[in-house]
Image (cartoon, rainbow, N blue to C red; front, side, top):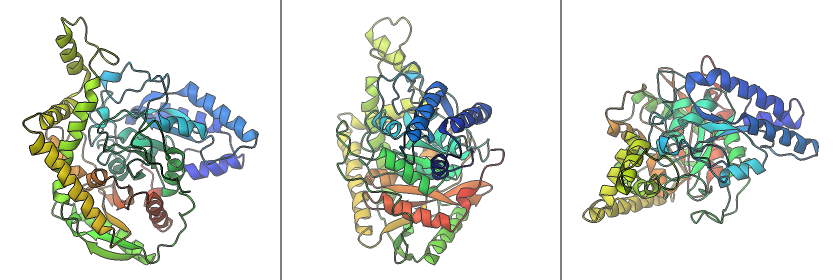
Length: 483
């Protein structure tokens, strides 16, 4: 059962080959047995899962249907779940039980999805390796000595290890696409505003976006269908009709114009990954796509701009965690200042503290114009580059990451080296564009991803291209040894 995709589970439930309760019990037992190797879960929700599974079976018995009805998933531990710990991977929120469900959680529950638990993540979604979690690092199931990518590494490792078919994730600078690439999954970051952020604990509000992680584009289409849509509780949610993402999966790629930016193939890209990307291009050409070289001239400025904007927004968002209203509070504070200092010093880990300090500095009176304002101007230039490119091509293709997954701890002493691994992904967040990573091969036994970017609200086009590619390749079907 654990090898089935979300689409196969939907068909099996519809054909009464097994019940949601039976499947849920199998996967919960598998998580209990195998997750100690991976550390991909922070909380397991056995009682809730079995309750939801029984309810889904009852709904099916009454004639209801739907691809998510009875399907087991997990939520990244920054989506608020009523009465269940929502920790954000931080000591600061270790004791926090959300009083309500995030919109994404509520929508998926209404569709009949079964929540198996909450997955591990980089603390407050800050990181590229899933090593900054207060609950310990997550391991990559393809090689337990390597990182699974971050910040959605718990969701990625759990799905890759076949502990469950799909999971929710979030992407602020590549945190869905990069772990997808590192663990041989398909991961989709939707257009900014496509999926509600209400109840999703914020890191950088103008960049954060929720999305699906699964093994196939078909499964991502199913999960995104349940997540997407306008939410009046979220002022950044876009009131745009949600198409049937599964309906366009079978469309032909004949004549599709694919742009390949020359800036992607610089000295920083592992040549073995470059070769796999070229192989992917050839595969898509066989399916009728037309390849064109394009340019994104301001891409080189994206990392410095991102690492001013994101920490600035983080310093503002995380100021609410002060030890007064909720979250971690230090013991016996001498006065209010001591309460603030020690609660935040004890509650936040080193990476979060680093980004809060950078952000506070960038927003300070003497430096706002020199750093934050300039970064926002660069952000506009990055967006303009994409708009010009999409006048010539339908989608943009390139590597998801410049290197395969690195060893645990390898970049801990040099945070900037880890930041540079986001070079291909952060531009989509700065511009608010949809992006998808899909499996494209292996380097030294570790998975590699190819990234696709599209114009706003063209998630269906990305899923269509990825699905057609996956019908003609088998990278996405590979399973890590031991799982």
